[in-house]
Image (tube, rainbow, N blue to C red):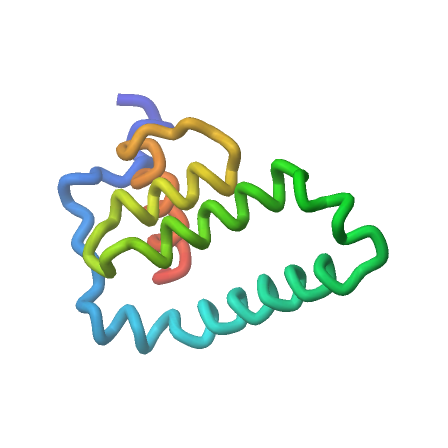
Length: 110
């Protein structure tokens, strides 16, 4: 086992926060990010040449990710991972996306 192997979390031992604790811990952060996204979409929509960017693939990915999250059940982690893959423009597998998300969540809990 190398030092790099030891730094990876064992996905079998990851236990998610209870729902109420997750909401308490991350609500304000999520709210802030949603407001940032809303402001960005507003700036794009109000800006000169907004019709020129309607076909921009980056904007399409943001909208597609919002649709995935809107349609997803709160319990459906695969949908969240799919939204991450859509926005990143990659074709992450569910396990790769899950690993990426869990690393992000784990780093915030420290």
